[in-house]
Picture (cartoon, rainbow, N blue to C red):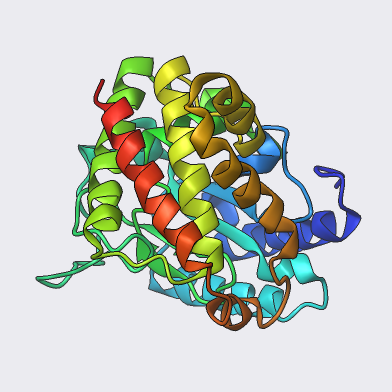
Length: 291
């Protein structure tokens, strides 16, 4: 399997595909890369975003076996093994809009449930999800979005299975813009009010680039990579924000990688002026997004 420019990552992806196929059996439909690698700009600082499509939601036995698989992959020696992120997606759920199926069968959510990956209350079907740097699967809506569907359909890299376009309908650009505006308002309000604190360096940089990417997607009706959004921003946002965005992109090369990276990230804080400038940029982006 040579799906990426990184042989070590390809070995990890091969272990993922073969392991998931062994666990799921006939319920395995296909395995794919989406995210940065699908968009053509994956690099040594990226995580590897995967989607595994299933015929039905994995039952308790399959869920337990997939948990064992991901713990074993996380313990592999390749640093990429600690930087997989993705979901197990039932085929019929992925075919329909995110809000069409509110609950996963056999996995009721407690009153007051908050998504472990996004911090949001229930809105859509929670997939089995592995976060970047994590070794355990959780139920999360993280990938149940039109953003993921568009990248998957238009750019997804097939590791095994049928073409992505046969599994997901085309995403309407205006519906995509509506979802992105909702994400901007929800997360942006938390950032500008201080209920979400940018106290980690990676989160400060991620937030700055995320809002640049969302402005780019609103302008084009398509999801673009971080470099594509940065190139667009150089031409279309106020010049005062460019040093912030350029710095956020450059600092990715300094992020810790491999085993222990989450703890190392938590020990790295942004400069106070960078955090303040990021909050100001989020406020600016919210105004542009509603314009």
